[in-house]
Each structure stands twice: as C-alpha cells, then as structure tokens.
Image (tube, rainbow, N blue to C red):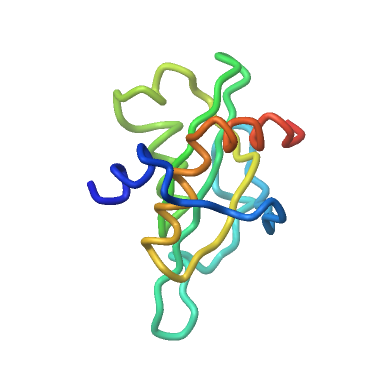
Length: 125
C-alpha cells in the first residue's frame, strides 16, 4: 500500500538510462525457453523480476513482478480467471531483475506511469 501511495504521488523517480534484460519465452507462454534455475536466487538472497507482457490478441500490455517467472507465465496463460485470462496468450517483451523487493515494486509502479508506458511503447514487440 505504501508503494502504491508513493506511485500516485510520483515520489519515485528513475533515471533515463535503464538497464534492460530480456528473457525469451515461447509464444504460447510455455517456460521452455526460460532459464532452468528458478526462482531467481543469488546466494541466500531471493531475486525479483519485473516483467512486461504483451498480448497480440488484445494489443495490450501487462506489468507485474515475481520471483518465479515460469510459474507466473503459467498463471497468466493457463490458470486463473482474472484480467489476463481474457487476452491470452501473453509473451514477455521486457524484464529487469532486482535483489530488493521494494525496488522491484517501485520499478513496476514507474512502468505504470505515463513515462513508463511511453518507455514500454518504445520496446520492440
């Protein structure tokens, strides 16, 4: 809730030189092309991944974060009855890794702002 409020107040700022990491995924959402070592861990620390999905069916984007991307992709493409079920299949167009959950949540929140949406539109998909 605190991060949500900060996003609404636009207290979180990011620099324009964002490091971008990409992970390949099959168009059907299967995780066969994703790394074998999930959830993301570095030593004893859990890693968080902010991701942007794109639906060719609806022409829309979805932004989220997780520590287990293959399971999350299954959730978006096969399970559940939420908003993402309507626009299946989803494919990954952008990812960025964080060691801190709060930083991942802040980046996710930034991607949902006007500047973040402009950034997403510039990603080739």
